[in-house]
Amino acid sequence: MKPISQVIIAVAAAAGLTLGAAATGTAQGKPAAPPAARHMPMGHPTNPSNTAAKAPKTASFPSGVATKLGSTSEAMESAYMMAKQANPKLTRGQFIAANMVAKNLGSKNPAITTPAILSGLQSGKSIGQTLQGLGLSSKEAHDAQRQADRDAREAAAAADSAAKPKTP
Image (cartoon, rainbow, N blue to C red; front, side):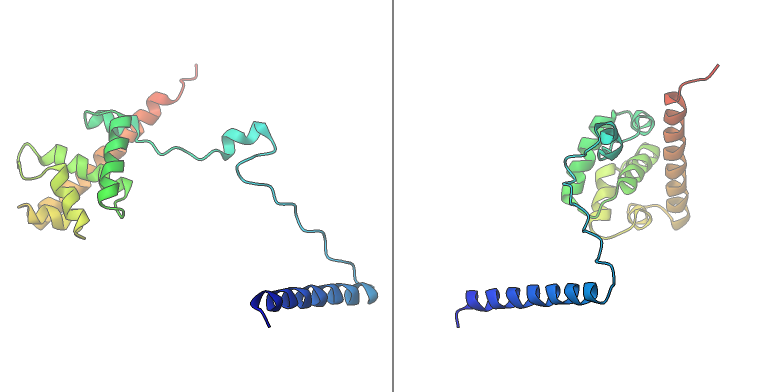
């Protein structure tokens, strides 16, 4: 028998069993199953007023973080996308932390740069391990990470509070 014939027979048998089960249920006085929900493509919302709510949120860097780093949100986003191509496992938080740590420590230790930290992350090390490899002690690396996290949170919070309209 040809393979196409086997497929046709299998489909016919499945359809027959399904129809038989539905007929048996109806003959026993059980209500038929509710009709299947109609499939609506995700790209075409039916209610235009909900379009904004269903639109995917564009991932952009908070302006406060970008400003604190001496950059723009667009430039940070572009740099992140380039770094992500080199290291697909790189997270947005790691990228921000690498930039904050490099900004905070780069003047004291010229070996600590954003590319050096990103390279360490790409090789599978954590930021702390990378900083230790660049000459910091374990405590200094830990403190640098905490300070970078604090700076990022403060910058994001400052941008959020500036963006909110003031009520009289």
